[in-house]
Length: 393
Image (cartoon, rainbow, N blue to C red):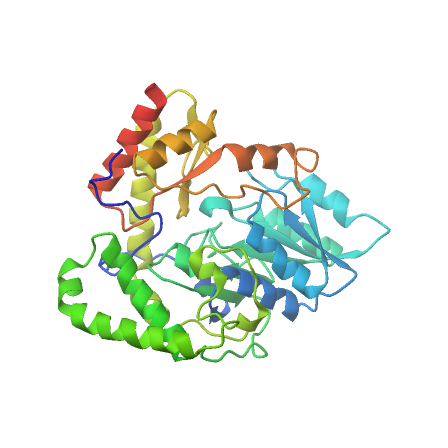
């Protein structure tokens, strides 16, 4: 084990890497239309469904390969989640969606949710045409695709609404966005979540960076102030009602959905970081790190990238690695200090091989490795070395 080495961050943590300007531009989902900055992607999904008037007795089509956090917002509306098939590369099965849309009896399908898994786009033109032909709304789930160029448009520009998760791409404790290229968002009004939330967001953003060895000079300079802030935050927490959380479950990797966060805007700290960040630099670094990991994988037995190539315009969330023996590989990587995500594992209760064989396989065999812009060269080298060692023993 590498217990003596500093931990590698799975997600971006605060440093200067996201803010150094780079020539050129890169579009974000916020460029797709009117936007509201909320606390998480799942809140954005719920708001989109509310804006569309989705309710009881209706169906919402979700991909069979999914995060469990996608389902509770659908259930909150009273609608029934129904899972459509995906291919071996996680692309939406258009024939299966068309069959479900054409069913003459039963509850009406109101929305098709299309997820751009790991930042790779779904067949958006075909999905848009299919939804338009059946009078169904398209909701782009851009939780994995905050930055990108999808056939000349930013992520989220094809759907009626888009839901995004900025905290997967920036060093944020919380953050998401509801975006619409086709509808106004005047009815979506947000308010501040209170001083406890603002303070917790700022403290956790700083402390996560410090925990991974970033901004050491700032950590020393701010140590007395941070101790005072921590005391103030603890006092606020003690006075707050036990049932009222200071931050949504999404900020601490939970899958729950609390509708009390529907009208809360993202914290000031998160909004400032978003405004000051450089999407072009973030995209360039993520693509560079992705390609370095892809090169390190070449020729390793039992391992392959989910996608054979990284298309132009894709800004990846993680590096999706397909493993023949995922449990063993995950154990070996974690022992070596390499963090990972098993997206969609487990799937929602009742979704299995009978629902979609490809989704079941992806859920079981895909490991998501970090490729974000905050990774240092030494950390990338450690990940590559751990992959080589795990594959050779």
